[in-house]
Amino acid sequence: MKGRNSYYRRDAMYEMRLRAYAKVNLGLDVLRRREDGYHEVKMVMQTVGIYDNLCLKRVRSPGIRVATNLFYLPENENNLVYQAAKLLMDEFGLPGGIFIDLQKRIPVAAGMAGGSSDAAAVLYGMNQMYRLRLPKRELMKRGVRLGADVPYCIMRGTALAEGIGEELTPLPPAPDCHVLIAKPPISVSTKFVYENLKLDEMLAHPQIDLVVKGIRDQDLPGMASHMGNVLESVTIPHYPVIAQIKEEMVRGGALQAMMSGSGPTVFGLFEDEGLAKQACQKILDGGLAKQVYVTEMFNVRS
Image 1 (cartoon, one colour):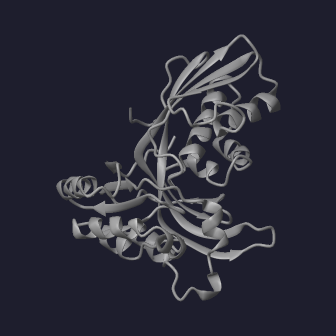
Image 2 (cartoon, helix red, strand yellow; image 1 turned 180 degrees about the vertical axis):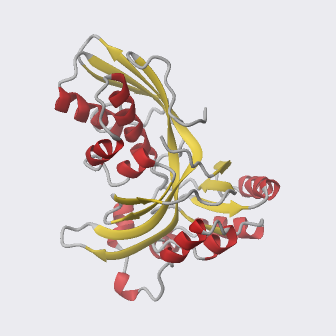
C-alpha cells in the first residue's frame, strides 16, 4: 500500500502492520579504515520495492516474542527486531509486552539491508503504537545503535551516506526505472569482504559525486554510467557467479549492473520493463540464481 505514509496501520494502539523495504547501493566507495576498525564510506542508497511484512501486537504479558516464516532465523535476542523492541521498551519502561510476526520476503544475508529495515520498521511502529512521539531524527539516533544501515532504513528513499553509513543527506528521488534483482545461492561474509579490501592497491574508485549529479539532473543514463561498487574487487574473484549475473543483465539490456553492498545480490537498471523480465527469465533458466525479482525504485518517505 503506497501513499504519503507507506507504513500502514490497522489499530495504532494495539496492532500495526508494516512493510520493511529493501535497499540497493547505486554507488559504494570505501575511503579509509579508521583506527576503531570501522571503514569510512561514501555511497548512494536507494530503496526498492521488495519488502518484508511485519505485524506488531501489544500483549498483556511482559516480554518480547518473535515469530518468523523461516526456520533458520533466530526468534530471540539475536534477531534485530527483538533488539529494536528491547531498546525502546527498556528506555521508556513500556508496559506489557509485544509480539512481532516477521514474514521475510527480502533475501537474507544479501546486501539489501533486510534485517536493518525490519529493525527500522519496529522502531517506527512502536513509536506510533506507544505514542512516544519521537521525531524521525531521534529514531535514527537510536537506530544506529542497532546497525549502521538502520538510520537510512528509517529515512528511506534516495540518500547519500557517509561516515560509517550513518551520516545521511537526503537526495531527490532517483530517476524512475525498472530494477532487476538476483541473489545467487551463496553466502558472503561482510567481515571477510572488508578485511580483504586492499584500499592502497585500488587504481580506481566509483565516482559517487557524478552518481549524485545524475540523480539531481534526473539523468538515468548519466547516473548509471558512473555507478560502481569498490567491494566487487574482493567479492567477485571469490564468487565468479556475481560477474556472470552482471554480464547477463548487461547483455539483456541493462544500463548498468552491479553488486549491492558486500553482496552477493546483483541488480540491474532497465528503461524497458519487458527487457528486464526477459533478462530475469534467462537468469532463472541459466541457474545463476533462484531468487530473482523485477521491481522499481521506491521513493516514498514516511
